[in-house]
Length: 120
Image (tube, rainbow, N blue to C red):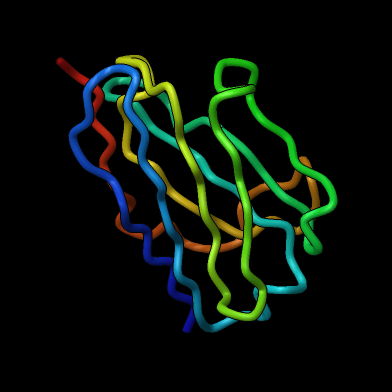
């Protein structure tokens, strides 16, 4: 059974930082590109960043470029998202998922996500 468990969210002031983690099980983590999505209140879920199997290639949505960094630990089957210079518009529930390839649809059912709230 595939499990995706996100953690590390919280309330942070504008300009602050958070590091999200996604622990996974039930599939061959090292064989799939991985992704972070987010869903803000009243909005559709959007792709934030993704990373290739060996971390050689990453992509970011324009609004987070230069502020967020995606990484992975294949040995620990864990995905990370380092978020710096956070802004109120980054407020959302963040989710991780595996991808069949870059540009493909997420493979598995969503986890519970982790809430990031940016506010003064």
